Length: 336
Image 1 (cartoon, rainbow, N blue to C red):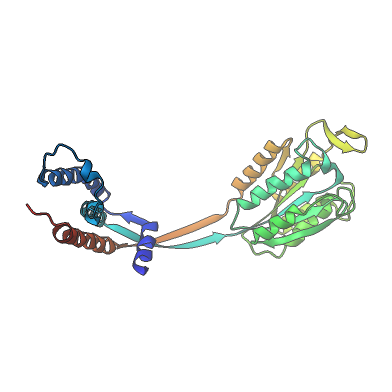
Image 2 (cartoon, rainbow, N blue to C red):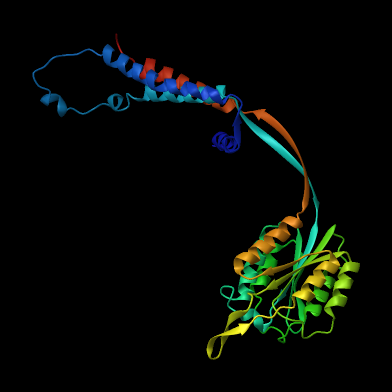
């Protein structure tokens, strides 16, 4: 059994040095046809008026298995052709150097994020797009800060993206006092990155409102981010004009008000960029653009060592050929 398990392991990642040898397999059908024609020609014939008496006679095991010599011969040819094609296994070793990027997502969870211009609402749409962004950057350390009237860290920067995505899925409304404390959200995100030794440190801050609460001035927070060499990308989330909003009286339209001047200033001071996302598709485009601008640099060196693996196939070809000889000239021997 170990022989066959090793053979299966070889076939999983096998490469062939002489793949054109497989063209020889096209000769199998003519060989089988010639063997059948030769066997039928060598059999003697007898004319009788009826074969009714022979129909009830039982068949012998030799009659039932008379196809075995041809089958074993065919299998021997197949394994011989595989051996001639020179199957090879390749051992590869990769030396990867990663220049890490530490990222903190600062997500607005204020009541205005319930607006339904994004489906099903702004918060859920932002969570989904952010989750896709995290999944697309497997080598980076990423954290999550949420803010409304105050801010807190939902997940510190980590490479355990499964934990991060699990904590992100638990983010909901009314976890903290309502409001929009952009300065506090940015300050908390900076605090998660200020001691990072990563080559590149960025914050992606998303807001759909105007700063109206908090202890930290957003402009001062931007200057602090600049001092720590932290680049801030800001996203204004919401349609232009009005957006549908759930209320005790049903869906009503509310005016969208975003402090774009503040968000643009934060991005400019830190060397980042401001984006406006007016729908879910635009939000995906924004994250995709940030992803392109902040790519992780990977240096990869590959070593490859190939080894011939034809021996098992040659052994099998020899085995079935010997079996064919034994069956053809001893078990199913015919008298000329």
